[in-house]
Length: 176
Image (cartoon, rainbow, N blue to C red; front, side, top):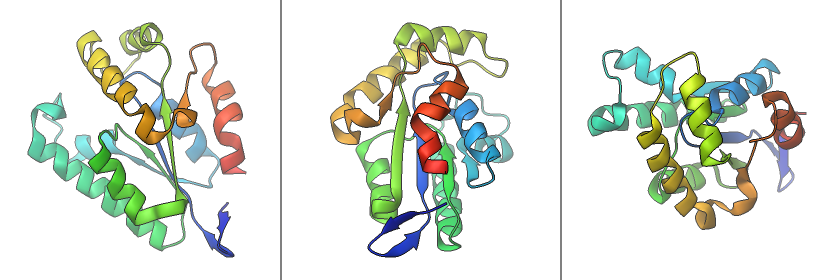
């Protein structure tokens, strides 16, 4: 599956981001299960290299290493002509600009951004680790401030949807 740009077939780099508990891993798992995207998870890279670190944001050097490896893996797969879906919190204009510069019109960014109450509840009830209400609030506010930069049309409120409904409504056309 590719998007057609300037009469060339190019792979898609799809960033699925948002606060902790927003559903990134669930959605990217569904996308990867189609067999048309390679899934790159920042959490998996973090766990591979820094399993002892619980909150990587408290360790800026380790976080930077995760971002670098995630970007390198994305670029390698892109150069091989493979579609990539990224599952991680990609925050800040600098970080986003890095991806925009490298992948240009082949980059799609979607922010899973349900109501704050829904995200907090999802974070509390997930089976893996939880970030906690303070972290969710901080990330929610940070993503809110980026709406103008990323584009409000790229923000997805899945508060009233199942993961499958969210996939069908917002991602299936990218994956076909």
